[in-house]
Image 1 (tube, each protein chain N blue to C red):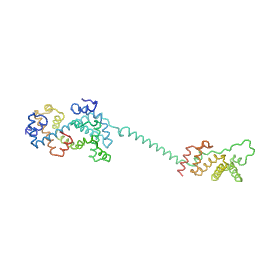
Image 2 (image 1 turned 180 degrees about the vertical axis):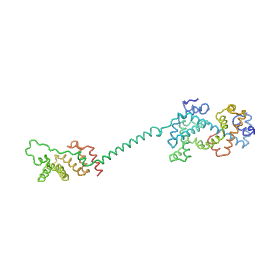
Image 3 (image 1 turned 180 degrees about the horizontal axis):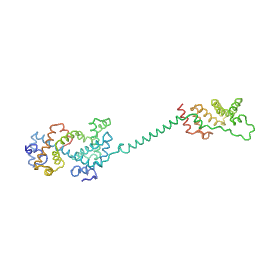
Image 4 (image 1 turned 90 degrees about the vertical axis):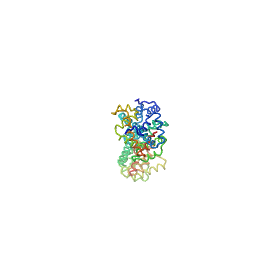
Length: 255
Length: 202
């Protein structure tokens, strides 16, 4: 069959601009009267458009091939540096938290009343009294570290002085009589308040706190040690650090 | 022109409208936009292959719109391509049935840029079907049709590349090849209608 004699061929020539003006005019009149020709024209027109689109797609694909070696891809960790920085930051925070909790856990396991007691404790030093002719027996015994004798002498006293109360409390503390020492320290502090003096206030407060610590009463020891730490004028300020207060707080958790 | 340098959008658009400037313009679009558009795909469940395929689709849709005079320059090329990229990819994800709530929320906030190309996106499947038909026409048909309708070569120029006796034979062959495609489209009105809308042909 000779294709160029078919209506379709003529319509394609019309679409491709290959007809003379007279031929175009004649065909347009036929198209306006003939729905079959209109449908065929529309079909051929759509097919031409599809081919053009196909050609463009092939062209883009070939350019893509040509450029594929130079195409740059974004970094895998998403939108560039922002997410990777966030990830790094989170990892660093996590590591720090693990370290902190690990340290706290270790401290928690290692902290004990005895340990803190040993760190804070310092032996009471009786001040020397030059030229004093009559030094009491109790003081002599205390300086000799004969604490049992100090306790015996104290028991005989009908009206002990503050110093005797304090030396007795120390003797009890040294011999493990913490409850007795606590009673005496508290009595000393009350007498100091009653007499408006502070002769043994700092000492009594310090050693009272130590006795509470020794008896595993950190809740009673903590406020006393805190007051000592916060008072730069306190005789025992230097013995109590913030670190030790933290240790005592850990004891509270443990309790 | 095979240069990647266009001073502004207007210059680039002018190059896209002509076959002569098309190659350079496409390369320029690749260099300027491929990375940012592929980032979106990769960040939204897509692979590198997806990013490459979608970018080519984006360019195809964009260039056809430009050549049909449908790109009104109400936004920059960058903004328009980004919107095209987003929409085409979401359309693809829906097709793969991977839509999630975030994407559905996005669907509901389309702006005017995206409405302009909704028909083009809707015709994606139709294009793919037609391309398959074209691929099945055979090598000679592909050569002749692409040479004439895409590369705008004359029958005489096409004859030089083929082993045919004369121009009339080439003309006849061209008609037969295109008629095959037209008949296939006419046999499937749904496909024809969708393709017509997608190509916005006139």
